[in-house]
Image (cartoon, rainbow, N blue to C red):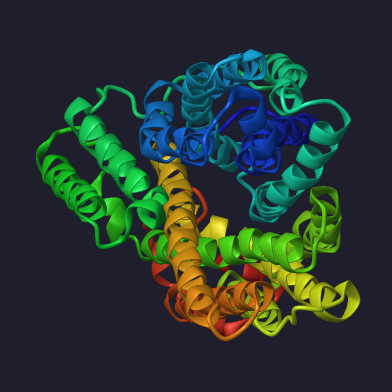
Length: 496
């Protein structure tokens, strides 16, 4: 089922949807800049302060699959509006919070609202734009918001914290959330859920949500508790046990939360594996390079945000125009592989950045390559993750790919941070503190580059052309031959 919108109204709806998604993306990074101010104001210790971030990640990562399936069952528009409402009200509570408990609880509710919005927004866009060329352009806009929103959050967080107070990093969501809600009511027609006659698989929902929450908790606390500690290993074992229980439930129930047949679709499976590796590489770029700029080169938060500006502008150039043309011309595989390999080169440049590095010589080249790589790769990756999926499962597919990004990023960042810390500790006895720190960052960047290379190779070899928004068909069976036999625009449209 697709929405009956035409012309400019669809593009206006896309802008509104992306504005809602931008709120969610910004909130994952805008808080990081304000953490010192929050700790000083509310009396957080170093140990308890991490829960300002972790409470959000826990509910966000744990509820993505559930949010996507609820959208399929009860209507994507209805769930999107509910998620925006929940997120906006939780933002108000965060901004007014005067105790640690209130802030952490409100952050958890924010994560729930963010999970719902993230899970159903992609399926709404896929259903709004069904023509391949327009869908590629729309997904480029969405990809830019997702890829560039994090670094915009650092810049905005620095401005609001410095000029006003940390409360405003949350309160700024209020007018945006209200505007998004009102515009969505006006622009998006009400639609019933696609999965008519089905009931929510409660047992499956509880098991997979608990599994994801335990996994997120284990990962985000892995560095503090120790990766070989009883706590970390026990939580991961429990998460795997619940995941096995979930798969067993899904194989037996009449209306599963996640039809296991989705995992047999090659594009869906490949895109999600690539998404895990790509998210790990992206987190290496964004978070580790921000640490390098601050702790090694001595940049202030606002300067860090400005340092990411060239990459954001390049991503905008590719995502908002060129990426769609590239996808229509070359299909999904080659742009995805090329983009990820470019990103790997950018990370490799950061892996040699010196202690006394300069922006022009040691930061800008890597930022340019990473901006190009992200701008080229994000669009085909999202399209591949949704290309073989029926409209009735689009919310679930969106939840799956968002979960892959989130889990890949969280796990990748934890692993890379551990590698960096181990290297820095080993070097501390033979060199000064800043040089030891920089040596650890080099290791993290190097492994991030390896993740990007592996993701690019897998995507280039394993992806096949898919039918956007449709299930397997005879058209799909001949699509590989179409892609290899022609590079004309009409063939590229068929490939896509």
